[in-house]
Image 1 (cartoon, rainbow, N blue to C red):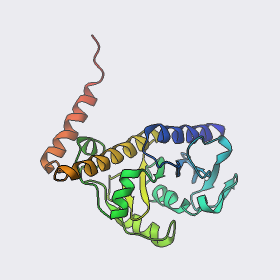
Image 2 (image 1 turned 45 degrees about the vertical axis):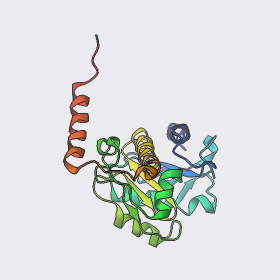
Image 3 (image 1 turned 90 degrees about the vertical axis):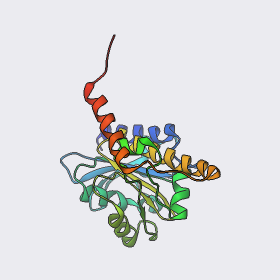
Length: 222
C-alpha cells in the first residue's frame, strides 16, 4: 500500500474524531479516492478513534479487496463509498458516522433544513435529505442513497442509521460533517423554543454569495 494515502486516511479519521461529530463509540468509516485509478483507501477498524495504519485497506471501486484485512462488519458498507465515487468523479473523500444529533434526525426520518447560515455556505442551501431505509450496506440501501442524493449536495442522512458525507477533499468532507451535526443540534435545542426556523430561500443564496465574495477577496493584512 502507498503509505501517503494510508497517512491521509488516518489523519482524516483523527480529524473526524477531533471535530466531535461522531458517536461515543467512534464508529464510522472514512475513504479516500486514489486519483487516476479506480481504487480507494478505506478504514477497516471498528472505530475511528485511535485508528492505526494497519486499520486501513486498499480496495478497487468495484469493492474488490486489493490489500489488507477487511472484517465483514466493516466490509458491509463499502458499497456506500464506492457508489459515491462511481457516481461523482469530483468526490475525493467519503465519510460515514453516527454523529448523535444528525443521527437523531435520521432515526426520526426528518430532513435537516437550512436552519443555520453555514449550511448555505457549504452547498446545503436546500438542507440535508433523508435516504429511505435499507439493510446496512445492501443493494437497496445504496439504491436509496443514490435516489436521495441531489446534484451539488455533499451529504445525506441514512434513515435509521446515520449520515454520509462526500466532498472533493478530506478537509471539506470533515467540515461538512461538522456543519450538518451543528445544524441538527441547533434544531433539537430550538425545539423547546418553538422549533427551528429556516432561512428564507433568497437569503440563503445571499449568504453563499457573501461568503464567496469574502473568499475571493483573500486574506487581508495590516
